[in-house]
Length: 229
Image (cartoon, rainbow, N blue to C red; front, side):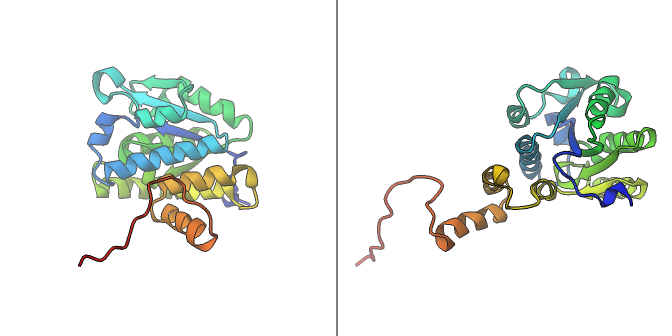
């Protein structure tokens, strides 16, 4: 049986964020940049909920790319940041060592979110799969390319080579798997309300108007209606 038939679990996964930096984001044209950042931060929070080991790698921070998104760093403030010069993270031994440390514990499913899809993500994915038995799960909507085509064909190339395309919310819900897992239920639904758009709005509606729960925030009195004379 192929290991790719095994779903992602909190025990078999680790995650790497590649070059989630402003100058890299400036060049992204395949996804709205604010949506991109929302998805990246949502994915990071998901990893934190499930105690997924997280690697953050950057390229040419001081000379070109700028600092990692502060919203991402705020989720994992104690994480080291692995700086490189190569566009391919796999060329850096610190990155290899970080991934190998967690792979040794059975975490051989590598969830990847990075910029740009057609360069840093693709070269890392191909090199990593070529040299190891790790599996790559490429988070399409927490990554971005310099054009729609650049992103699409990079994803296609990685899929042809054996990478698995996923979305950030798919990863979150695969880790949760069962709503009976109450130890993470509240954190997951809170994350969804904050980062999952219409899905989160639906949960808010269901809590208040279906189940009779209270609103998430306190607010002033609701006044009216008072039809004008």
